[in-house]
Image (tube, rainbow, N blue to C red; front, side, top):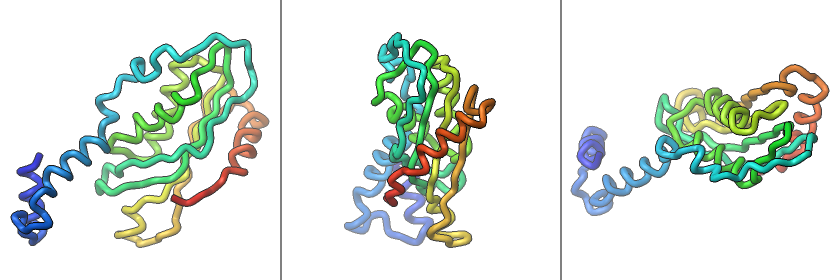
Length: 186
């Protein structure tokens, strides 16, 4: 990968041997491997048995999860907040596992739409709940720094499964509860 990065620097008109760029190929390689480490993560190992039998049937929401990913079209970052909910059916998951699942799928080359559904589908498979809901609100640097150059155009995607898709009241409750999110811009 280092040789490719050196070649890319030269193709951009830079001198890869220049002092400031001498270690850039190694840094970029390390950075890209970290930013795409989700491909190497095993979900079962990540969850590590943190699924517990519990007679709880109300909505569980983990909101305002920071999400950072790379757009697969331009290899530029997109970032924002992810909100996840599920309706347990006899099983709950350790709360820290929800953001870890978000991280696994965000640390891959992505489009926001796929990222949203992958998170929902994964939790649905692991927990077999009555329903799962995921909403992501993100700013895409491929739209902010280049192209249409719209710095404040956030994209919102959702995936609603089970009762969240079938039951308008359940879906509305979830959307109402995340509406009061902190909306802190990163």
